[in-house]
Image 1 (tube, rainbow over the protein chains, first blue to last red):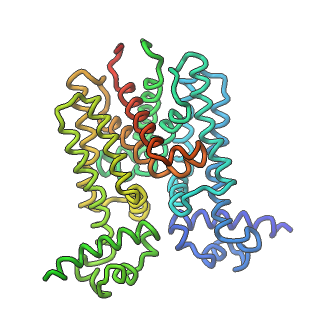
Image 2 (cartoon, rainbow over the protein chains, first blue to last red; image 1 turned 180 degrees about the vertical axis):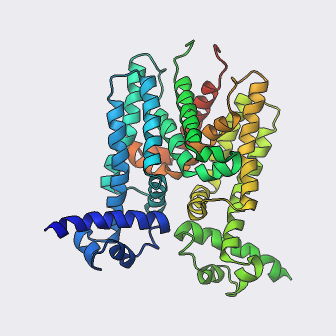
Image 3 (tube, rainbow over the protein chains, first blue to last red; image 1 turned 135 degrees about the vertical axis):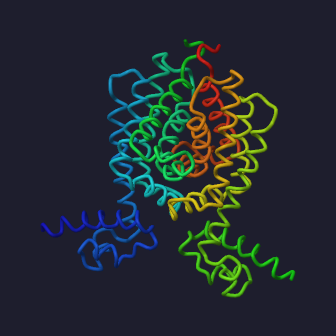
Length: 203
Length: 203
């Protein structure tokens, strides 16, 4: 039994690493099962197909970040502070899981659409930012704005930065690849969002 | 001679389509040369390798957008208006070349770093947005801010939107996939940027 419980976990870990390193297509069933020390039929047995294993890997990546943002969004803090915490949470998550942004985008490019389990978590992720904006509007901290569009503005800058960080460093200097470069970008994004959402005529 | 002139062009067009549809790895030399009605050695002969052909495809994509933004950045218009035009230009380019954002990101994921010819064009692309921000600061239209970070804020939202438009529509409704959905997003991004860059104490 112990072996049966552990195999799916090992398959997910091995698949995540091989998908991130090589892309979905080049990560063969043979390579994944070998890296997971499982037999060749283990993916089919535990997940049904390599596509379903891919969905599970993506659901975990998005789910981990979504859970983090959901917690932050519910904190009893001013909306401007929670915007900062949302941005910081995405940056912390990317620092702890450097493969996550690339895996997310690889999957998006591969499938175009998100499968249901991933979509549910993506709704929570985006919904957390939406909630902070809505709370801010209700409290008079933010001007009236489409909360979905504002949430998009927050998350798009955070995610794109981690995706193109290497290229940005090629153009604007290696500091962007160091932790202080990321911290400066997180401060900048927070500042841009909170200024852009400030009520009309705010000081 | 006419045939020799046309072959590299046909290879670039065929490779671009196959890279966008199938990814770089699955677009084989055989498939590209067949689609381009060229012989199997044509990629090596004209470009040296499939990697160099990939660089040429990417340089053209980034170069076309960079040329557009460079023109807009030099217009004798207020910086706030040029921010709007920069955003509109990225959206127009993506509407005319729906494969461009995906190809750009596929290449980024594949190589991690940009090759020199692409990097030059990427500098022009980003530099155009930087110039508009710098002009705005100099004219007192914008508050003092790091122009590179502000340029990143403009472009990241535009590019990420086109990359995840299908997923955003899955979450927030199909209107996002229609032209009016894109127009609303372009207006939103422009508004967010110009508000975020407004001088302290601006009305």
